[in-house]
Length: 387
Image 1 (cartoon, rainbow, N blue to C red):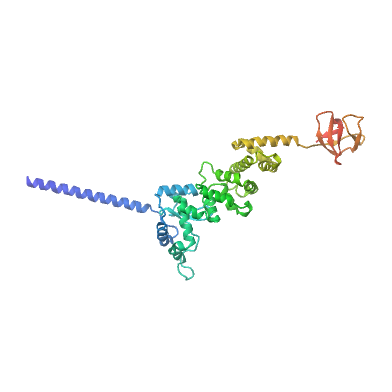
Image 2 (cartoon, helix red, strand yellow):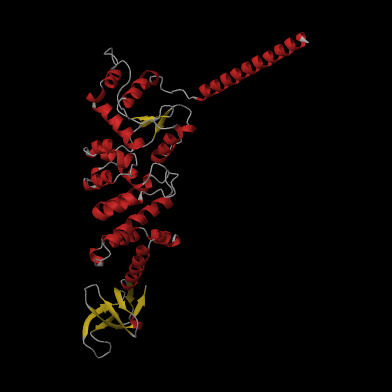
């Protein structure tokens, strides 16, 4: 009986031991799986610098986000899914050339040389160790705290510098804070003062997966306060659209032009046509490119009521102002231009046969015309052949 109990205890101990070994083995495998899933850096220098960058952020109250939260914010601002990237250091095409460190939860905003430079030592490491005494570090901290923490203190600091406001609002697509947005619009320069990259980034979001790719909110805000800027931006887009048609859908270009015209029409809707810069855009673009009118029609003017309304005015005025021409045909070699609509009226001018004249009104038997010399009068309709 005692032997049986001893044997049972031995068996139980053996089973417990095997279970513990099995659990430890599974835990070890899971740890290995996690470790194996962490992506390496393409740039090997990050192994040296990332701990310094991480400490710099930590020491200045940066709140590191959970991976999925950080990932979604990077998608929101830059349109890049860091989980689909091969390496931990993911280049962000934002016009500024920044890099997301997906394993670390921050972006690298430094644009300085890394490593030993001509035997002068590791300048970048010295910068990182310099803390808040270095402007590079201050920008690095503030940009991350704005984008990923919505930190009001960092926002206030960025708001002191016009160039940094443009970086955050335009290139990095941060539109959450009215203080930054208003400061940007208040200090905005003329369109001609900005490079092409700035203007493309102002028109469209970095994240092309957004339901509406056009940056309508900020463009509408600019139109409300600086309508001349939108007027010039529309001309820039219209005149330079061929440069980006290989990268951007032509329908998007038309949709963007339509939106810019619409917000200009909104701003000037209470003005006469001669003073309405929105109508000026519409009229000039239609005149320069008649196909645009057809494209706008096919897209039902992109749902913009003022474009629809002012296009009808444009078409009506085009019909009223349409010029037609004709040639005088008379076997006598000339015909008489008369002051009134009858054959006994005063002769204003003798027009040579074959001469081209402008037909102003051809609704009755006597046509109102204008000659090359500028005289206006009437000629019987059989004496003119319309072109």
